[in-house]
Amino acid sequence: MKRLLLTLATVIVGVVLVAGSVVALGKGQSEPAMISATVVGTASTPQGDLPHATLEMSIYPQEGPGNPAPNVGASSKVAAEQWPFYSPSTSIQLPANTLITVTIHQYDSMSPLYNDFFARVHGTVDGTATYDGEGLTEIDNAAVAHTFTIHQYPEATQPDLFVSVPMLGVANNAPNEANGYPKPIDITFSFVTGDPGEYIWNCEDPCGSGYVAFGGPMSERGFMSGTVTVV
Figure 1 (cartoon, rainbow, N blue to C red):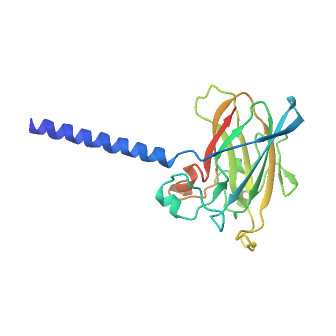
Figure 2 (cartoon, rainbow, N blue to C red):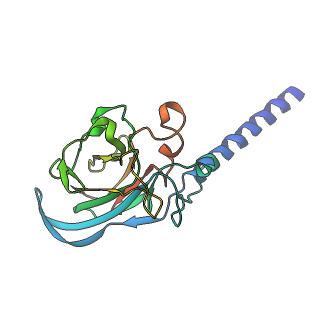
Figure 3 (cartoon, helix red, strand yellow):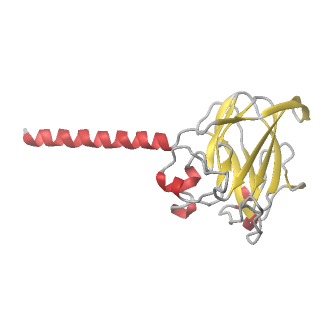
């Protein structure tokens, strides 16, 4: 009987520990405040005339004066260290069946990719992105700072949406300006959404901690990973 009670107690403790871990992870992956694309008119696309919406974001190498790191309940280890992050949020809402134009102000330096696939532009309306006004279909692997990569949840029944754009890195020796960051590279690209759906997005450039630098902020919403809701 004592052995049975001890076994039951061990199982109960294990269940409590697992449940506690799940709750902690859930809190660590809480969604930041939503940002939404703004409809600004209509535009001609390969799918015909569609509503046109714009979205503006930035990528910072670390927090700076007046620009704190995300406060999203991330693990204390990630929150306490200086990691790059997308701003003002990684929770994005986009209108359905709309041309979306995204402009990202990219302040971070270069770090090589493991996979050349993500050095190329995928899923934009013309297969290009502009980097300080220059239209390109790909950039050098070693010049990538981050990527902005939208993809579906596994086995999704919603409309397919895959967009991946490499973010060109600022020169490693670029001087900082008054705001504590170097002059950013402005990256602009456009893609078309379909019907409503739920998607995830993340950076595919190894810029974190842990195994092959894909841990830490790479999987933390608010830093280098987020969600896209098409409504």
